[in-house]
Length: 194
Image (cartoon, rainbow, N blue to C red; front, side):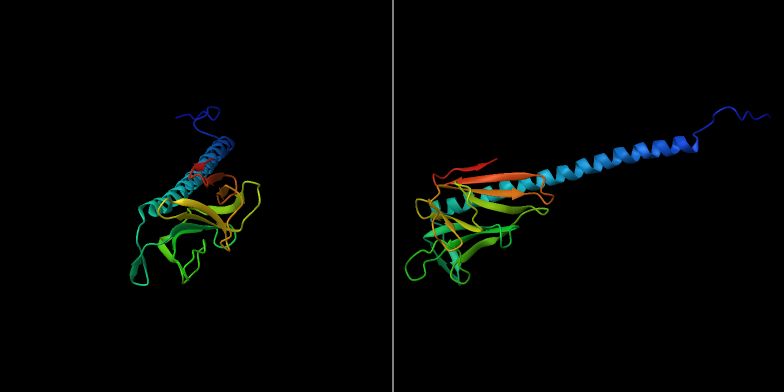
């Protein structure tokens, strides 16, 4: 049996290394695209869930829903959503503005007001990065309030002071900061996502 050392029966080491490099590059691109897909779906779901929470608060005000506070059931004069870009920007919650001393304060006060359900938590590092009025002024903490029974909207800051603005833009960003979604809530009752 004679061997012919001039014929190629397989790959050379250089050819094998080139093939491995090409496979590595293609795999890295696929993994990067897959991570971007997860990030995109996380911000889309987070935006949709926040918009639904705002609608839920509005519907609770329309329906004049009773809430539990301290073991008793109370019909609140207003239901709101608390948002913050400064304090826990990865969370939001719905609350009942319970009347203390006979007047609504249009803000969440721990101990006086009742949280409704558990906190909403954004997915995969999505956070509220800014809350802005129609003039572009930043508000670190905001409340979207719906007064029962007509669900009249009031937009208030962290101290319960009503905005002069007729809308608020809630900007959400993905963990990497590459993807952004904005929810616009208007005092007319419109909730839009872009």
